[in-house]
Image 1 (tube, one colour):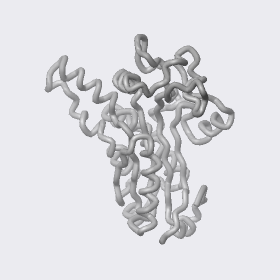
Image 2 (cartoon, rainbow, N blue to C red; image 1 turned 135 degrees about the horizontal axis):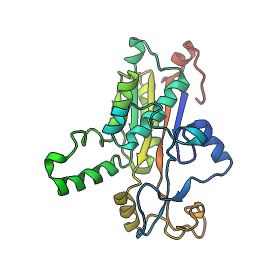
Image 3 (cartoon, rainbow, N blue to C red; image 1 turned 60 degrees about the horizontal axis):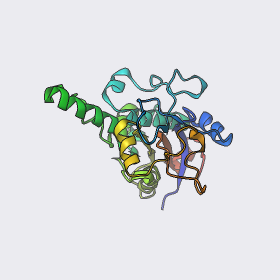
Length: 264
């Protein structure tokens, strides 16, 4: 059985646009929860969420332009864009952005999502019923499918090995990492980019979870107190978004190229 190590990490979270800023905020007990700004949530039972802070990259904000081409931004939902960025961070951290063909053939992606492109599905459904079938975007399908995180990452970074997606709700990222590790353990790949992404803070997503009585509704005026595990006043979770990715690598392969091992 081959050993697997972690040689790269990437994060896009509601408290930071990368690993360093996210970890700093977490260790300082900063909350990412706040009022929903991505749409007008007045009239919704839940009006709070953990949104990724959009911006120019300063002060921990997320800059879509840093690793994602404008053409891709127009074509795919934000969960794919978050996934591309987190995977890119992990590839850069691992020193694997310029691989030769032999390395590419043994490098793959295993990135998933619990829901996928819900905002895009919502938007194009309205477009269909208001304007007819010919007005639906030609990018509708390939811009919302969950496996397109792995697909887009593979295209961008030349990963020509195994390419899969995992869909297991809240366990998606953990399952993707486990499945990717097993591909390396059983010699199907030497390198795998693994993790998950989500971006479902939209009217349909919030309304659906609220109707299922899954979301916190008692802290709309004090978001940072919502969804505290094991607290007697906890009344549900706070919907969030973002992405996380790891580069997993076979131990000897990483050692030969002098890569650092964050975990093994």
